[in-house]
Amino acid sequence: MPYRFIISGGGTGGHIFPAISIANALKKQLPDAEILFVGALGRMEMERVPAAGYPIKGLPVSGFDRKNLFRNVKVLLNLRRSLQMARQIIRDFKPDAVIGVGGYASAPTLKAASSLGIPTLIQEQNSYAGITNKLLAKKAARICVAYEGMERFFPKEKLVLTGNPVRQELLTTPEKSNEAYDFFGFHPDKPTLLVVGGSLGARTINRSIISHLHELSQADIQIIWQTGKFYIEEARKAAEPFLSPQLIVTDFVSRMDLAYSVADLVISRAGAGSISELCLLGKPVILVPSPNVAEDHQTKNALALVQKEAAVLIKDEEAEKILVQKALALIKDTDALNKLSQNIKKMAQKDSAERIAAEVIGLIPKKN
Image (cartoon, rainbow, N blue to C red):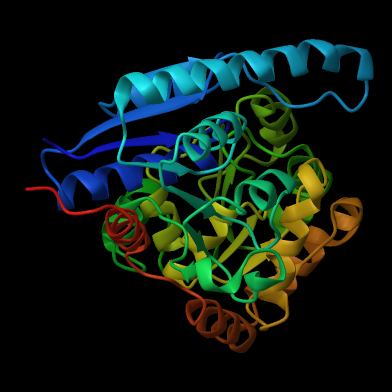
């Protein structure tokens, strides 16, 4: 009989991409393995996972509404229903192990698996563990983490430092490649600033750029500015007087590998996936952590780098005033850029998906 695995979680690209990477790594190590995803109905994974070639089942689960507590009656009813559905999915599919990558669906799925005696593995992406994973950890057989010092949250004997899986295509393009400069119509002799705010964009980062377009246009640097789909109209309108071959304004960068290749400095949110990519690529970065995430984990992710002089942190509320000024000073400071690059590279964890897959396989008895 083939091995069977359930992978659960999602909600954002930061959860979905590692989940798919782990599935691909399991298939590479066990080509006959059958893999089923369990996600949250109405969330991004319900489209992205089938597009990657894997089946998915959805649960009616959502996060708690902290502003309107009355709505949580429905949330709790859906959570109870999701737990029942997860148990049924597990009984029908009969997995050998269940992997949780974070996101709403992972809680009922891992809880159901544990109650049925099936080994579970948690992939904790952040440097600060959320409440759900801390609760699930009690029954988990293994916890794969991306940062040192996670025994603050989890039993030390269950921890394995694997890092977060990243998009493999980002690692195939050489630094400062001619193809990358040609793609953007840029010049290798001029410094390049890459501004990204995650898959949906980031209001604060975009407003910071809009407020200082005049200084940026005078700085004789090249800029790739990914705004995200919600902010593209506002950004294009603001950038119109400053448009030149040195300024690219786009809602989405289709070739992120080429963008990273030419970037001398990156401005980014501090999501776990983005940080893992920046570590592997050795990119100097100014991190502007999002304040709108559970337990402020982006700030904690950023501080883990800042403590090792591997990144610069600017608080969200200060960004509009000082972000561009700091970026323009840093991008011309070759020594500072080299130091950041060397230090962030030391924090990289390679082959994370393959190492996590090996941990999963190690949890189950061998089949004939």
